[in-house]
Length: 179
Image 1 (cartoon, rainbow, N blue to C red):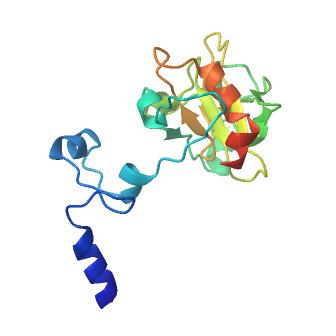
Image 2 (spheres, rainbow, N blue to C red):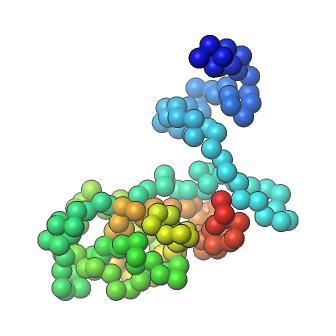
């Protein structure tokens, strides 16, 4: 509309909650992503007695990843009755905020899925198909390779900046659940 065009024109060059000047260097560090959520979506979980906050994007080692989408027919073919040390984890395998030990064994995994194989210290999140957020902290893999399903998000934190277990505990707070 004419009104929207006028409002956009008036925002040019002004920093506000709807507009912001961004230097080319910052755009480059974000892989030239120009979507608004990259620069404006910063929901905060506020806690009593805490004055300093960090953005999640500054705490992660890599981008937040999603698990692998493997069709049921492919999964059936890849399945194994023997313990191969390679597993596939479904959202239902996260129980009581832990990853179950009785996961579906796989014969092998595609090399391109290696980057999403879980590492110790990873945080798993399931937000869909559940009324509450489900989170799990990955520890004691003992050489096992676990590939999470596509409805599981993998947060790989920079452990020099934050301990993953504390981050998981934060996610389990009532305030985090509400956000």
